[in-house]
Length: 429
Image 1: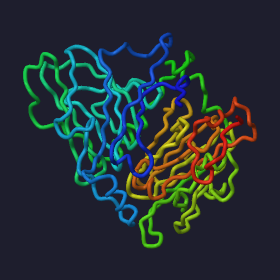
Image 2 (image 1 turned 135 degrees about the vertical axis):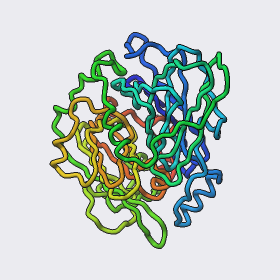
Image 3 (image 1 turned 90 degrees about the vertical axis):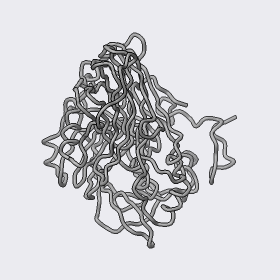
Image 4 (image 1 turned 180 degrees about the vertical axis):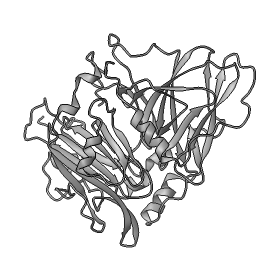
């Protein structure tokens, strides 16, 4: 069941278990504004979904076996655009018209940069938030992130390169698609345009420039800026540090030193039926303590309707990307070095973008504000899929003692019950 009345924007779906994401099975999701709610730009002549990301030639079962054997994944074999390799995908346009591209990084391991030869990209939406309409020559998309850009086919009529290349990697992976004018006079020419490669500051400055359009309507008629998140006092600060290491001679990844291991029963079912021994609330700390990595089914408790601050601290030398299921959050700050309470002085408390996936640059931190208005057991994870699979994730249990249907719908009658929940009833007959 998918309820979309309070959500708009560009997203994608994918299989999340058993490393199946490496086999594909993903696609775009478009949630349109209701007809009477204005959108802050004219209807485009066309609306394309563009799924980009790194790819392995190996079967997903072989990749999973490498991880299960305690090894890291090798470097990806290439990058795909809508499932196709270099030159395989094409997008048709008419000269003089404006088009919308809904772009998602569906890859497993790398941030990417997207650009179109001789065309400018106007960012208009990020994961359900209408943004200030800033124009870029190219745009970075980190693992799991989605955005919408507008571009106008205002160049001489011919074919042009669409280029996607990996960021912060050596070597740099690159692939192309074709932007084809309907009255094209010829094929693409010259080398594909270059883009940023390892420059962190370039990406950080671009990320900071992405702001919410405060006067535009979101899923409801009221302006996005009518929710003044910067005036709300936070009631809790959670600091999360990612790490990598060996446990029993095998590669693992962790959050605050805890490397997540799945339980034999889905955590939401165990919580709903009050099944003991599946997980332990408080099995992960609010703060990193610097100890060695250990295994546990990590669950952190949080109060329903609390307004909290989460700080992601990345002391490693690779970029991180974090996703929180069930929520959008305000990305209020990011910078290099160690986060301290004084870092709050630089927070954007007016027009920070609200999204569900945020990057953390190497040796850096990112801070978010979250209104916990959605009861449930929510996965907070790395979008670097090997790291997620080997433990860089945990569950945030947003809890209330209320059993009102206003706060949480009951589990559907046809829900699949497995593990220790097998044979139980979801609701009275």
